[in-house]
Image 1 (tube, rainbow, N blue to C red):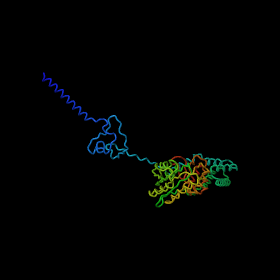
Image 2: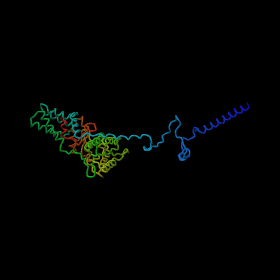
Image 3: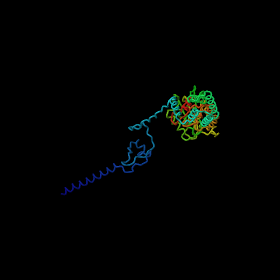
Image 4: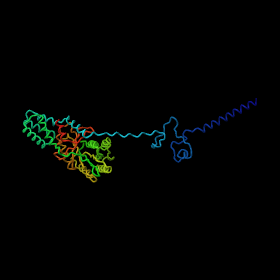
Length: 405
């Protein structure tokens, strides 16, 4: 009996010892919460970089259910991402193909013929009257003057028509129409050189400056002109020298990107426009491009300081390349005010050609004749809409035919 009791006591003691040892082992294997600091010291042999060097195993994974550590700002190079799926390369934007020049000429003529050009309609109606007396001729003069043809050209056209109608004695609408067409073509003057000087020189690109007052669409015109030149297989570069209007440089760059044309611009608002123009031409020379188009800030013709600045831009460009074209952008709806603008700009930068915008939907087509007579400078480009390809070289006969169609 005593022997049996002793055995039971020994078993109980043994079980107690085993339980104590097991509990001690479990406690030593657990990691108490907060054992490792949340911020590591790179020099700490346990929690820092030295821990790995010493072979110490540091557990980086957060406990289950906790948020991941905050972003450290470290950028992992693609070649070190291991099994991580490589990000696909961004696709290059599809380039647009500008409409050929001849195609847009035909479309613009058709659009002008359908526009609200009261000039041709009124003249044809008057000349087709059964009786053309002094009252009719006075109405014709008034119609031409309202169309901004100008006093001198108006008198020339009326006198020539009166003489021809008197000599022929004809009242046939077709014959009168032909007489009017011929006299209008003479006034528009098809003998003027309307070609754009955009051929590359031996070692330098052609340089084209685009100028004008605020709001006439200079930046848009530069973008559209770039499309015309790209359609002619020209290598073009744009210079964003309009550094005062917010987002002008970005607007121009967007036009260029659509047809694969680079843009030189400044990221600083109010930068010196002459400096930007200089760098654009320099980049054009280094890149051996065909044409550099320089967009300039809009300015009122009566602001002397701004006009002087425009002259400075041109002089700075000419330190390294000749300015082949200075195109003045005019809004056809401004009428006689456009003539005043043209005179002042011509005195400052020697205008070589006119870009006439917003010619659709206006009865003031006579401004073409008035401007050319005043400056002795041809209209070289016309715009008849807001589409990307709504800009085309000006043709005297095509313009008159559209007016009288």
